[in-house]
Image: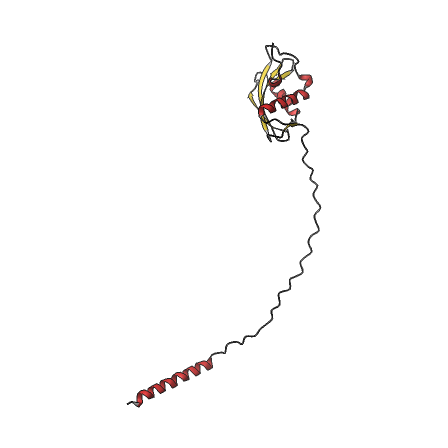
Length: 179
């Protein structure tokens, strides 16, 4: 009986080696490693760069002809009043205004950094004299561009218009007073 276990061992070992041989015969050998030189891909010829574009002629923004160095809207109001007087010298009432005026209006004017009028708005419109309302607005717009408020960038200033029945006026900022 002692031979039997040794025989079993032998049989098992022989069977296992046979199976291993069979399996090794069925498998494919590993691929042989072959060194292959890989060349980098040749880039396609890039199209030539487009010719440089002609520079577009852009007209430079015109510089303001008149400049205000005012730091506050109150300071700017004096510059604006002087500007309006220069443009309307023939319409300025000379001397002291009479006690009774045809109209008094308070107008706000917004001026951009180049001195152009952005907007106007009435704080107190002389509604009893619509012709004066239209004439004041026309006068302000006709005087543009105003001195450019270079230190403020843009400004909204307020002035009072004192209107005589003759159609002449004074601005409160530069008034000579009333009798």
